[in-house]
Length: 80
Image (cartoon, rainbow, N blue to C red; front, side, top):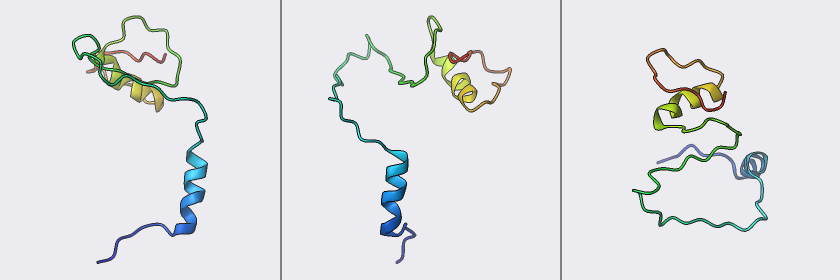
């Protein structure tokens, strides 16, 4: 059985162009009570929306790709 995989010499070029070394300390608390913190959204774009909700997630992702949300979506992009 043969699998299609990249040549070993191509891997460093791909990894180095997409990843950067983090020299900062990492910390996180993965023991949060789901009743207190029902979810976490990590975003590298600043936003000023007050009270974002789950219904805003899909419109925000579409906006990040430059696409308009369909009128059937009730949420709004938090990125605009």
